[in-house]
Image (cartoon, rainbow, N blue to C red; front, side):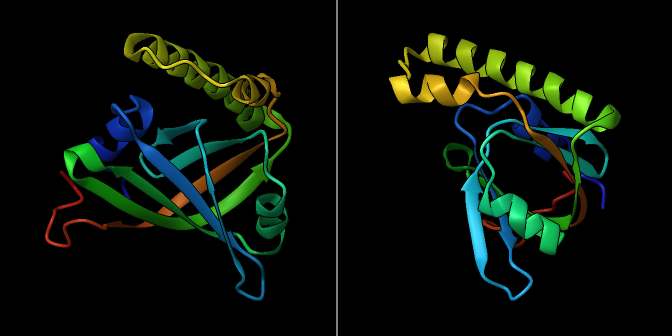
Length: 155
């Protein structure tokens, strides 16, 4: 399914305060949801998520490729759920792309925090210094508005 320009901008341009969560589940259906920061839409139907901290998430992906991504920008009254299948890459071109996504997201985060006067706690510096371990490529199959069910997701 094609990802709208509006959703691409929320993810790639990082709206003022987007919240993005990545949901996976075990093969038996036990869910796991984590916040993610290094995320980019890389094509009309693909989202790349950089793994720097995944543990349960990675184990779940190895068992079950079905995932969901929740995106919220509550100040703009926008929220979406994207569902699809994920593939894991630890080398090849996709992983190289993930390294670039990691760098771009880190630059955008630093600029936004400087602009808004946000001082990161010390423990967050450690997280942002971690090197990517894998790239998770999600092929989006379904998209829903979770705030306004009548909203046209193709806007």
